[in-house]
Image (tube, helix red, strand yellow):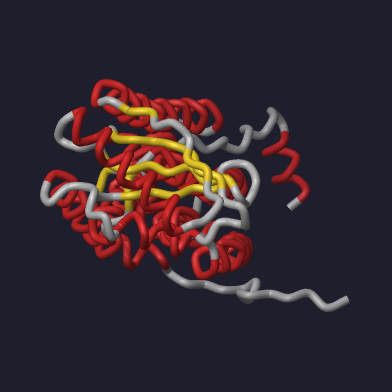
Length: 319
């Protein structure tokens, strides 16, 4: 039987030689992402800024490109369209207007425009998302990210040792900040779907790091006298084929969505694609070096039991 091996089984790449460059590059990108988060900031969607939501029903499957063009031409700001139920049902979200009167006027203008340009369309009543509600959604989303990080910390700490837990969580925080930087640089809309994308990247990231850490733990028991730096390199090389294979499969599965799907799903898929690359490289060049710095001469290794009394004498006689 033929087995496809993306990486030879006997690779001996010395990944830890690049640990300083990897950590420095990660720190720079994460710091830049934090700066971009505050200035110029993220492109918050209606979920986090407040605005108007309403549903429309078209006689034929909705043409999102035409609908978005018709609404954008009115100049009422950011608009988000999402399929809601059948292909003929669309949920429209648009950013809030300065006053309630202007907001109602914007809804009436959009409604009339759609009726004129899309014969047979039905426009439902509008619903406003206020600043208080949108602020609560943002806080809850950030809380979900924080709780996910804490839960992963305790999981890895419980399964391994504290050095593994700290290394994994610090790396995942760096991963998340980089993904926030992606939203800041690309101008993608940051909304509740973005929180789902970040949580997805977090889940993938922790899974990848557990695989590498699990092999490190196994090798700590097998090679009790091997230097930790050499042992980590060995562990990464042993899991490299699995890491690249899983990452490539996930990447190829999301690639069609990033190319051919609708705008909202395209942005979600594009963030996942970048997240897969970030999570995979951080497992090797960030999480492993942190473990090396924290665990040198500190990680527990089971020592071989001392020889029983008489064994030495018996061995001497046998010799």
